[in-house]
Image (cartoon, rainbow, N blue to C red):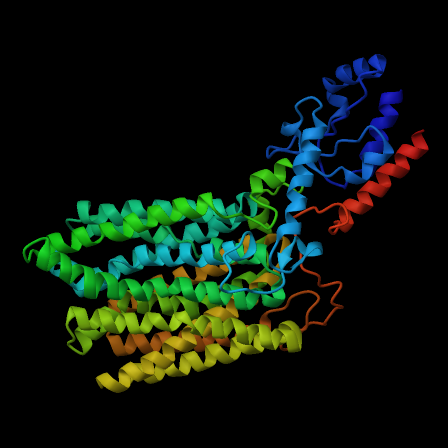
Length: 573
């Protein structure tokens, strides 16, 4: 009877969800300990066992320790070494005293500012790690783009064949972007991102070894397109910085990373390939482009190893350590994806990212080809123009993030929506102008202005993402990011089937159409362009996956649960 009453009271103190209740008793009470052991094998005292490690609330031995007891994994219960568990938790929380960046403890110890030239852990180390890994990922993914005219001659392919491989490369990233978001929610951005960057080295290196015809080249580019680290890069920033500066931080890191697609045009197309052909292969172009692709693969392995070893998933450390210390709620990847997928705003931003990043992917793959065939430029010159296009990401995406934050801090989410609408509309009109320009110099000038607006539109779109669904930001970011790949694949088919001018015109109208979807973004608690009502700042507080007990900022849910447990214990005594 004593055991039944105790378990009943503890169940009332738990949050309303299915979990397994685990009881711990003093060794000095052998009668109660024996009852507990017998009850642990009785299914009537246990609720449904979740397939993903269930969360367990372990009642402390006295009321004094009740306020310090957070969630923990049942698998971590090794029989009673709570001192070690408490020590590991306190050790993680004590790290905040050494943070060099100002932070908000109530929002998961996220940074509230940026120190761009700092490389200190955890905030600024993750800031630089995110863009460096993303830069490497793009550098590897688009390493073949400036060499496609040479690959075309070597494998005896047609123009349609090249765009066909571009299409499959973009499609390869679609399922991965959907998958990487929930994986980030569950395992953290650091592990997910470095794994993807390391895996990208495999298809990059194998392309030169196995590509002998259209089929093998398509398969290699499909696998290369799947190794996309954009989603974990953006998610990593949302874990480290509050959303008031998150738009700027995401845009800066996204822009610096996207420069990789432009740098690779210059490095592999204008520098490495001519050097290898002249000095290592005695003029053999076929062997030269194959050897050139080994360099990006080696770079990916080095970068992935370094940042896996010397960076963190979140401000308090890596997800594995934080969960083991009981400071984070276990997440189900499937539940996270389900919540993000059932949100209409995710799909509106998905479409808008088709009109910005999808266009960007198309130009990253096709800028060199476009100038080579339409204006008769050499491979080295075409690659240099492709580099010029890609370099706008160095500053333009940051401009989009800054614009989104500036409008957002002044007009809340409504300001961010207006900034996104404005950038997409200007981008679409410049696209239509570029499509009707048939002279080289004006075309280059318009391309530069157009590329700036493309990057700004990408930055303003992702400035909205953290507001859509806080607890499932990773899944929302994955869905929105997949829009870029879907847009790139669709536009690759358009370029494959039509003339360049027609394809460029279709691309411009696609961007304008997606811009007109902005008024239909409706986020609860915020006023949109046409709909919605603004709530108080306290009600719209940023979600944090961390449970942070103690003076450094306690979770309201955890505090409420602890109070209920203390009251139930007093009543029982």
